[in-house]
Amino acid sequence: MIRFEGVSRKFGEVLAVDGLDLEVFDRELCVLVGPSGSGKSTVLRMVNRLVEPSEGLVFVDGREVGSLKVETLRLGIGYVIQGVGLFPHLTVAANVAVVPELLGWPKGRIARRVGDMLELVGLDPGRYGRRFPFELSGGEAQRVGVARALASDPPILLMDEPFSAVDPVNRLRLQTEFLAIQRTLRKTVVFVTHDVDEAIRLADRVAVLKSGRLIQYDVPETLLERPNSPFIADFVGADRALKRLSRFTVRDWMQPTAGTTDAAIAVDLDASLRDALSTMLGSRARTIRVHDRDHRPAGEIGLQDIERAAECGTR
Amino acid sequence: MPFDFTVIARNLDYLLWGRTASGEIGGLLLTVAMAVESGIIALVLGIALALVAWRWSGWVRRILLALADLVRGVPLIFVIFWIYFLIPALFGSSVPNSRSVVIALAWFSSAAVLYSTLSGLLAIPRGQYEAGIASGLGPGRVLWSILLPQAIRNLIPSFIGLFVSLIKDTSLAFIVNVPELTYVSSQVNNRTQVYPTEIFLFAGVVYYLLCEGLTLAANSLASASRRTGKTAAKSR
Image (tube, rainbow over all chains, first blue to last red; front, side, top):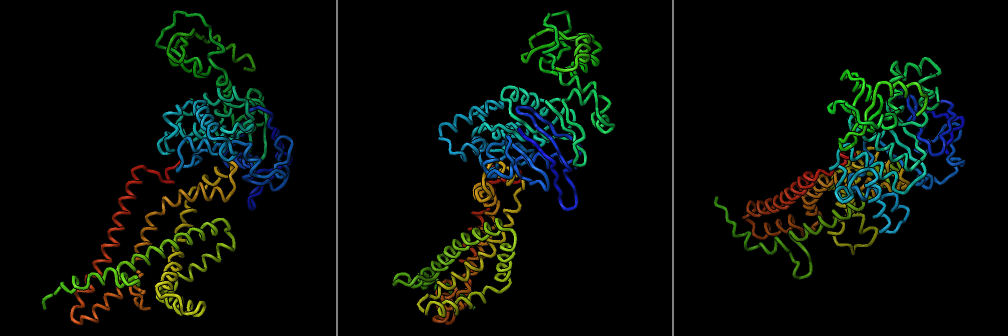
């Protein structure tokens, strides 16, 4: 779907991207991760031609991006950025409607689509549609950003550190929600972050960059189990076994039996096994209660379930 | 020496309207008319030039800013003289003097509008432009419907300030015999001979009330828009 062939980009004397060959597969979520200055944002911005390569070619859907009319290319690519992405002088609904309006959709269709998109990202259209961006919390603003990027149903989504400016609790919630959306919509997503945990949690495939070079491109499990260099091993961290657990949800590994566990020590169905393990260690219990969103008991999960997941390679 | 302010009352009509009744607009009315007219021209022209300077940031912007510097670097009264002598040379002598002053004021103020609008556009976070073009909008469209509305909102106080200076600067039309407030005041003074203090005090108070009233109105407008907090800086 998106392919980089021998792509380099220089800014003055600085080589931001150095001979990149990379293929982002159809309907996959590819996370570009690396320390700051690794060139990950530049790579992302070459897809919608916010940056042009100095050398090499970028293909979208088999067509070289330089050969397409730039506005046409961009209409097929949703773009979510951290910080200033929303237009402050437009309401939330008008922000989401920007691209459909550009495409000349009829008014009724736009209004329906805006409502659908806000609902998709968990915002009540009646309450939020007429607000202005300054009336939103950071998490809400970021949700609107996602809704706007998805409004015209583009096959590709580019996300440049979309959740970085949000506090950790809300970031985790946004990640979970976005994963759920992605499981339904199956867009081809390129996602840039400097946060390894976020990369491992979200990615179908992770590309680790360093000084403009692609160091390793693999599914998260392989990246964690078989880092191809000391740099990767160091970058994913000594806690990589724990990071792997963050890719499993309690829902998939718990026992649906209602045991005799203490109701006060419990994890959410959608929590990760890493969170479950942490709860166990914190409470010195080998088995803990699992509850659903409404705090009703849904089963239990034990240390042996987590070990089982850790031995099994993939989710 | 006692003051006699009845001279104002006796000449009030003339000071406020000049010979408007007989078809020749004058007095305070002409002052306001000239300020509004040149203000509108300066606003439209200045914003249009700022858009051009923003869009073509290379030599086009440099030339425009150099021209603006040239206008701003010369006392307004010289610009008035130039236009006053230039317009008759170009179009014959049929152009009324008030016209050439309006052109001079508009030209002079448009340079200031160009400067503040351009800096207002450049002050908007870069992400706004990027979010616009990444959505598939062309650069012109981003400028017109994303950047300009935000910039204008932030620039309203500075535009009001420019307009206040413009009102005061209309008094320079006095030098080319345009019958606006300052000129009719001096006519009344020449006619009555002995009341200069009263007459020019009155004219000054009128200017002050006009400018101060406008400033107060603008400030209450600005604080109202601050209450709704819609500034680009707070944008996400």
